[in-house]
Structures are given as C-alpha cells and as structure tokens.
Image (cartoon, rainbow, N blue to C red; front, side, top):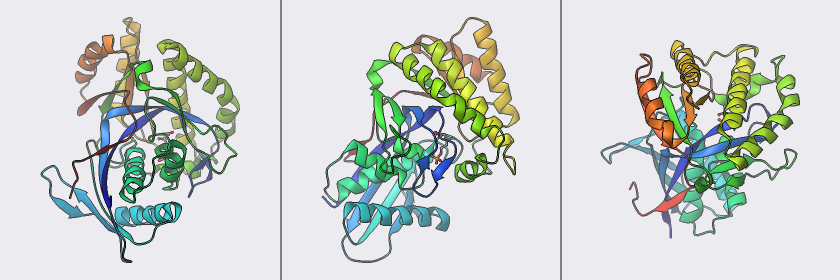
Length: 333
Ligand code: PMV
C-alpha cells in the first residue's frame, strides 16, 4: 500500500501536560490523563512518493476540493514527515491532505488528532505494522504532547515514566468502560493568540508552576481511581481544579497569557449553577477559551439545553468518549 487514510480523534485532558523537559520532542515534566473523543476528528490521507522531492501538504474542503496549506502549517507538517520518515526508515517524499470536523487551534486539541492521524496514515502508507507505543512516540515527535495520547481510545495516561526518552502513552480503560459525554461549548472559534508551545515555555516562569507539580501525584491518583470506579464527582472535582491551575499558571506566566474570554466565565457559571440544581456536571478547558463540559449520558440533554441558553455559546459540539485511530478507504485524493 502506498496510500492510506486514517481518522483520529482529539482528546480532552483531565490532568494537563503543561511545561516540558524538551519541547521539540514533547518530553513532559508531568504525567497527564485524557479521554479520547469521537466526534472531533481529523481525517488524513498520506501517499508515499518514493522518489526524492518536496512534501506536498494540502487542506481538504467540505466539497472535496483541495487547497494549498499555509506556509507555516505546511512547514510544521513537512518537518514532522521528515521525522516520521527517519523513524520508519524510508526515503522519499509524501503527499498529504487533511480535514478537521471542528475549529482548529481553539483549544480542542486539533494538533492531537492531526498528528495522531498523520502518524497512523504515514505508517500504513509505507506498509508498516501499527504498534501503540511506537505510534505514541511518533505522534509526539511532532512537538504536540497531547498527540501522544490520541493514538489510543478511551482513557489514556502519558507517560508511564516521565524520565523515559521513549515516553509513550498507555490505555487506562477502553471507551466501553465508562460512557462519558463532553459537550464542547465554543465561545470563540478563532485561532488562539498564544500557541500551547509558547504556553509550555512560559509556564516555568509562573510562581505557581512548582506548587502544582508538587500536588500532582495525589491528583493523578484521584483521577486514575475515579476512572476505575466510574466516580464522576471525584473525577470532575479533580479535573476542574486542574483546569483552574492550568489557567492560573498561564495568567501568572511572564509574560502572562489570558486564554479566557467573557464566554468562558459565563459557561463556568452555568455549570456551577447546574450543579447547584443537583446535576452532576463539571468543566475543564485546555489552552483556549472554549469549555469542555463533562457529564454522563442521562444528563446530556439537560446540560445541552442549559448551555444552549448561554448567550456567548456560538456552537455546541456534543461529543463523547471514543475509540483510537482507524484506517478508512475514503481517501481525500
Ligand atoms: O499537545 P500540546 O503540545 O499542544 O499541549 C497540550 C496542552 C494542553 O492541551 C493545554 C493540555 C493537554 O494535556 O492536552
């Protein structure tokens, strides 16, 4: 096979990757835990062109049209393709086309789904075997740490050992273990002002950075146990505290980063209000203004209706836990 298409989903972190030992290879300073989604996905087609040449990177439109990617996006993908080729032991160039089902660069982990899909499709295009650990390493060689988690479905922790340069993700539980919903309240669909790469770099300048790291082993254990026991209250409280810490560190970095918008607070207020009314629902945010609202399927309609009434919510994506990457015969070219 010289052409392959992969579909991979974004993920939402309950414990965040924030701050790195090595940003280029995405070696973290702490373990992170996430849930892989099912609706927010990237579809990527890769063709291996064995003769030497430039990589060709295109974006696919809804109508099947293909346009040239912007130079910055194409350069990032091309750099990663060269890393992948080295890791796979192949020569030549690649043609790539990709499409997301959700707004890119708005804190919905489009780099996670994008690089997980790229690693999976490239590996298949050169006819090599899929291996979860290898795929996790390949995905994070892109510089996107969250991509290391999107190569697996369900509930995922990365890494097992933070000192390990071969650091890979592993699955804590499959998607069938616990059907959780993630309602993504989009309050701003534009690209974020500060990349997560800059956020990781600046995080170490926050006076709260070390403090959070010191408390993390306990919080990680709470999240592992709450997933094992399907305990939404314990998971939600830990995930919400963790999201506040991430943004506290961002806001107190030098220079500071404000990812929140007025709509972010409006959604957080509504989630607290729902809890006050007896609904088990919790919120978390990645490096962006949009809020991921977590609940169980029985509460999904009630939560969706309440979020739909928040004036600042411009789109609501109803997502839930999902599987890892899969290959598809529906190629983009
Ligand atoms: O995957 P990166 O390198 O863009 O970093 C992701 C950072 C967060 O989304 C904020 C947290 C996480 O663990 O997903």
